[in-house]
Image (tube, rainbow, N blue to C red; front, top):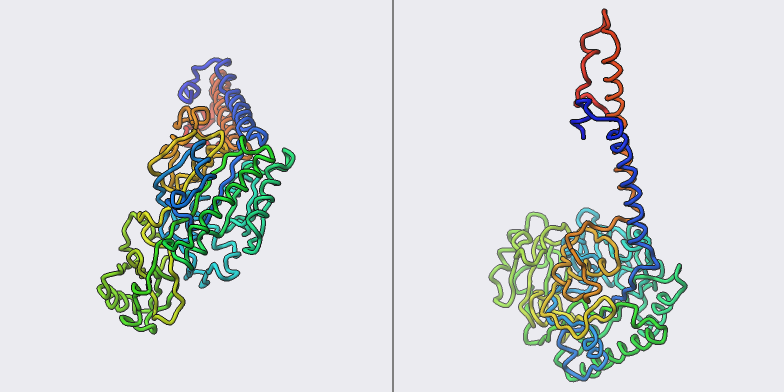
Length: 486
């Protein structure tokens, strides 16, 4: 078309068509956006995390509610979560689809040398927005797409991230019962259409707390696991009472598993390196050390071959499969203990019988994953997935365009029912009704066509005028494309 216009070989009808094409495209894009993102048509999704619920707990004791979901939904046997296998990094990965090095919540305890600030899940530092804003959680994305979200104590959901809180949320309070959390989130899903949430997240602290204090191999954990199944049953019954069970897609998972520890498997760093040479930033089993200025190589050399039950890395030498290098909050030296071992400075500190944080390929670190609802297949068992793949799957179910992430819908599309499965994953992404890109693009298209049309008319008029006797030769020449400022 451009060549045709510049050669003055097009008729007025063609020019008119070129002028109108961007306007037609704009109308179609806007219609598509409205159809894709109307809140009344959006599928509903509830994501539930039972902290520290290991993948094999559901077969350890009778868990009829879990198995009812599996029989009528899907289950994934092996879920590879993100490194390090701690609570805050993995919960943020579930709702961003990003590895910890990318979303910035790299540990439960961390230090940012640029901010010169420390983050700890045990202090109010967790409510500072800047720790969380290297990524955008799903509840922010869906609200910007015109949907609504609700959060019952999910890590980070009571923090103002990129200027946004969930539409409805409960500030974190461990004393609030699971039943109360469920009742609130069911109320939010049951609200009138204009107020009902489309996406919800629900968090419960168990069986993580009991796993730490008792150890996952303790027989006392049987009662804890059975109680989680009863709580899941309560959630299902509340959804049924509200008429939501068949319409809300329910995903039940966890952030990590749990490994058994022993007081006979303790590594004491004081035996190998002086505390004066470093600052202890994060705890076992992946200990993060910040060496004092000029002491990095000294600390590293003292620890490198100090104990066969731990691996010592400089940050840049961590295995690439961990995806745990490219963030300033990852400390220069990391010490990873072998499964079941604990790293302490000495034995005077508190000791736990269960812990997590180890290599994310270890089975003991991997969580449960079951799902049920109209978007999912029935009685379907999948061998493996990555936890980062959940984010694009949830975005697809919610009909929103995912932000850049480390997951892949292709890896988990087989979990979807035939009716819900994408007909063509290569299809162009849905246009956000709140995006100005189509308007700007169409406006620029109109400007360009008008510019070419002006040139065309100008050249026709110049051709019909007599030559200027005293005019510059430049003035009678066609305007070059490089001189156009459209």
